[in-house]
Image (tube, rainbow, N blue to C red; front, side):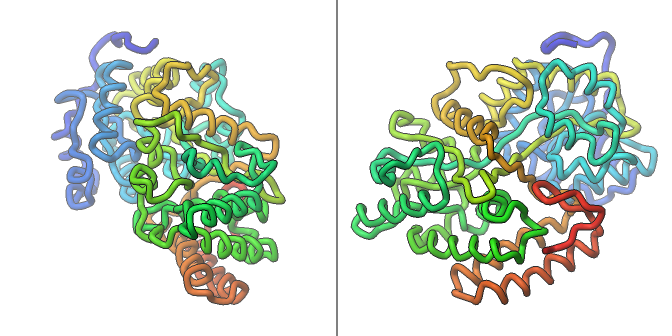
Amino acid sequence: MEAGQMRRGGPSQVSRRTFLRGAGAAGLAGLAGSGLAGCTGFATTGDGGMIFLSTQFRPVNEAEAFRSTLAKTISGVSYVTIEEGPFAGQVRSQVGSGATQMGLLGGLHGDLAPLADGYLEDVTDLLSDLSGRGFPADYVDLARSGTDRAWYIPWADASYVLAAHADALEHLPSGADAESLTYDQFLDWAIAARRANGGRPMLGLPLGPEGLFHRFTQGYLLPSFTGGQITTFRSREAVSAWQYLRELWANCNPASTTYDFMQEPLESGEVRMTWDHVVRLVEAPERDPENWRMLPAPRGEHGLGYMAVLAGLAIPKGSTDPELARDAIRALTTPRAQLDVLRSNGFFPVVDTEIPGNLPPAIQLEADAVAKQKNADDAILSLPPVGLGEREGEVSKVFQDTFRAIVLGGADIRSTLDAQARVLQGVLSELNVPCWAPDPAAERCEVG
């Protein structure tokens, strides 16, 4: 079905109230207490319609923006959001009890991959039907989750990039190309900018309580320096990476430990260069795009490590309306719908479509940087942790604690990595999960 067309016949009418009752019947008592209702507002596209349960676009403004896009794309679908932690438990309990109350799922690769071959419908035929959309080969492989079948359809992606104001760009090292920086050049840039600014750093980083700087070490710094994330955690090259980060921090605004969303200190002028998630950068250049640039991440000895935040669309076993779910997937992966999501929510197309020149300027800046990062000859694709469920926070804490000890506390790098490696291995061993990109997908993830 093409986007915007009405589907023949009515969808299975599962209202918000019915979904909540059914959740209890499926062993999901305490749903409201889990934060599902409270943190999402539970607004829907109408009193009824197939439930589209998603971990994405949870903030109220993002959810409403996507609901507007969804309403233009297909009818009869109600978008409901949920945090990543409870998501897998809800799917497993509903499918396991034979009382599925939802028709379609949306989540990151790490949300969906652990549910493959047991809780999700095989969508290999649908992926084949949609092969003309031009999904990247890496994303198609991820959708197979290590099997010979596809368990979700790529939906959208996002990433993290550098942002710099003209005030900082003036201090680029001689001969450096802003769109093809090495980590050494990035450090030299931060040093030059600080010195030119009377000793006040222009660089800031998202190190606040809700900041995402651990994704920088996981998906950017370590892959670029070591070629991996977990299997190279204690390597000689990892020691060099953390030594580099110490030097970078010495040229970083110390208030960074309070920054959650970098667009705020960028807008205020407190910092003039940074790295963050594209959604957390976009507001800074909106009013003055002529003075801003978004840039690909730097590269190290192994290449340009970057993290792709890949979202997918899946159909749970026992879907309340599998035909409508497939129609919704077809509609949401058309070029028009993909570009609508880019405009409304800042997530980028995963189909082969030209990015139009009439995007809002800030989005256009980000789109260009993300494309250059993804298409670099030496790009190293990294993913957020996969298969950890509610324990993902423990793995993130390892990287956060390592930063605090080595960079903020001046602790010995080798002994700190050895100690944190034991913590990290303990979590991975208990979960018995394979590694995720860029590490090899061995049956059991071992910290190296």
